[in-house]
Length: 512
Image (tube, rainbow, N blue to C red; front, side, top):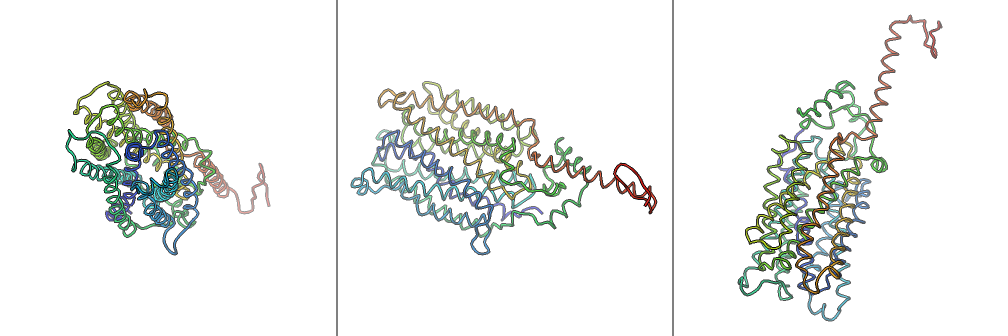
């Protein structure tokens, strides 16, 4: 049964609070720590790395607990973890971006330690919301096309959340000073970050309530009766015909994935650890996130250090990236029908390579910065949406361990992103010419993002010939089912040919 629109959109807004906070985290955390609190570049990178590690450690643990079933009474497992995560975010996020100058002056390094603790609590809550929200997709629908649509809607609201943050930031940074008066961020801008943070908290809390009101949650595990009903709908030959039709690009994506007559088995976390497709998709997802996150994190610093753009540009350029990402998300549905999802990933990689090349230019006018932002926005949008779609494909209808799959992918993503930012910030001690890091951050935006783009290409080469979702355990189950079906069919035909007083022995026919 197709999902109702209220469920689709109710689900899609359930990650807006996370997206608003993530936009602040990735785009403005280093700017806030380096230029407002005046912390060392290496220490700023370490605090971001600490948050990513806390997120990475929390993610798989929350994923396994979400699959096992921590609930609030009759509330669903995944929605229960969504509530827990939202509460943690509300309690911690304001302490990261709203500075208490009296406390900062009196506590010194103790205040930095307090920020570190709040960052860990925030990342635990953020991970709980992210994993539970992603894992709801396979539970809500068995239609591959609807799952892709939910991923697209989810990403559209993600980008819209970024747009909201950048619009508020643009108003905050533009209202008090003219272009000539100020081109750099400083401690006097702390009030502007406070305004942005309060706006994020209010809007995010409202959409979290909407998500819980309009989004149902069904059990992630199929009953034995449901499995038998599925198995009785098609024979092995019909399964082969339907999968062949999907390979030829007919209407397989519009068929319920639960109606393909799959054998009776369950995918546990140990099975995923032995599945090559799992690691190939993880490689693609981690590097897709790295491309988008590095562009978001270092674009404001690139504008400050390398381009010396006016203050409001650190809001306008990320806003253009978000707008282009929304446009790419809407175009993706049509592109996927004409050239397929795998080809769309290659398009995203090529666009990213063009953006990395342009970023290496020693000088560019303001209009070129807007063009560059469009390229980065389109590339990041295509790569993230499609990598999430591939993740849903490998899960299929086996949703009993979907939280583990998403949690593991997010674990790799957080560790890779955290290490990348930490190393980039630490290298400023040797790669920068004193306080001048203009050339260094230009290289980060070009060569630094070129590397994960090439890793995305390698991952796509590995995935290109794969039939995602046809795992080793599924192939083994098909083989066992076919063998048992063949043996039962031959025994029935033998009984028709033999008399009632004939008994089948091992290798011989004997009279009773």
